[in-house]
Amino acid sequence: MNTQPHTNSYIGRLHHADLGEMTMKLERLMTITILLLNRKRVQAQELADQLEVSLRTIYRDLDSLGQAGIPIVSYTGMEGGYEIMDSFRLDRQLLSFDELTALSTALRGLESTKAYDRSNMDLLLSKVGAMVAQAEQGRAGEGDRIHIDFTPWKNSEEDQERYDSLRQVLNERKLIRFKYTSRTGGEQEREVEPMALVLKNYAWYLHGYCRLRDDYRIFKLTRIRELILHAETFIRRAESLAQLNDRWKTPEIHEANERFAVVLQFKASAAVSVMDRFDEKDIERLPDGQILVRTTYSNERWLIRTVFHYMTDVTLLEPADMAAKVKQMALDIAKQYGGLDME
Image (cartoon, rainbow, N blue to C red):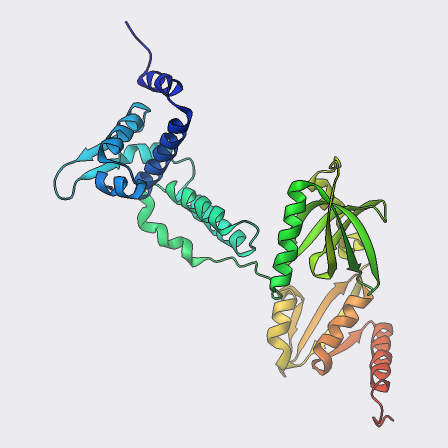
């Protein structure tokens, strides 16, 4: 007596089929499955039209799916068609509706970075949609209530081309050369082994091994100029992406033990910007509408930039020595504009 399940005999027949026909059939079976998971009911003629095959082929494919263990039910009449049993949808759902919604939202946020081709991302999103159980589909619109957009404020065609070129050399492990402007304004030519691309704070960065510095470095893409892609390949170094990210610490983290207290007084007109920049626990609203902010900084340059960003809408009250530096800088700036009367 033959005790082997139907799926084994089906797979056995596939092994004897022509490889090209088998590949096409597997693609059709996957497409049919995704359609049935996404739709309540689909008619055989619709499947035949979409896949550009005969009705007889569709019937054979549906039979093959049934033998493979997918419970497909057929209905007759004007509203008839084929659907997958609801019990199968529920049993096969490994993620909850809320988890699937979160996954879909995250993928759409990733889509805004243009990190992947649109066609690939659309296919991935459709696969996630296929995982949503039929019993939960009435809530599908809830995923539209949250939108994540990582699109940088500066998003020119040149930036996109630079990103696309770097993604290409990452896959091909090719050496690159470019001119790079540091934070202090200096420019040097770098020869780099590219290792990874990272999106941080709405900006793309490149992890790489700099042959000039003989060490790992990270480069902001907007500061890269005259990018040259070499034909020379290299053997990727053993450092993982997690290790590369561990190397990349902001000055604020490195200087955590060197922070100093700051008191800033803002005019009422700057209230919205203050709320965007500072934590609520650091904000004190005064009766006249002005705002006091008590916080800490780890870098004098960052504090000075904050003060000059707000111009006359802020006064640095503490520390006194930093307030004196800000005053002197303001005087130096005024001197750059000839003809100004200064007392």
